[in-house]
Image (cartoon, rainbow, N blue to C red; front, side):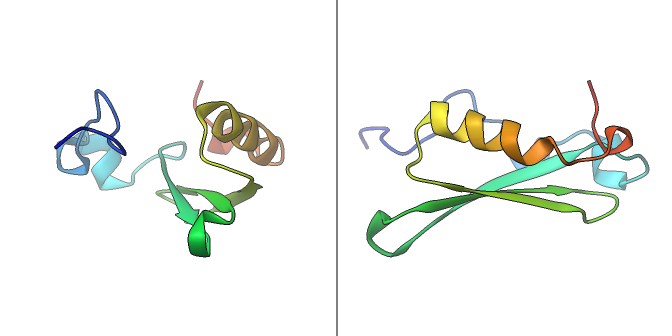
Length: 85
């Protein structure tokens, strides 16, 4: 395997903290990206684990710069109590 398409220093979902797994407090998010057919575009999604609140943003490609910009745009509308510092 050549390592392409792998996230470096990735932490497995099975290793998430017990507090996060319990869904007791607001502010723990899970993110993912959805690729369009033939990689024609992407959508970044983030779901707050306790409330199920979803934010999403359209992206042209999967570069880290575009992903970060999409997250910044999407989270502007998220209430402060649903975000952790």
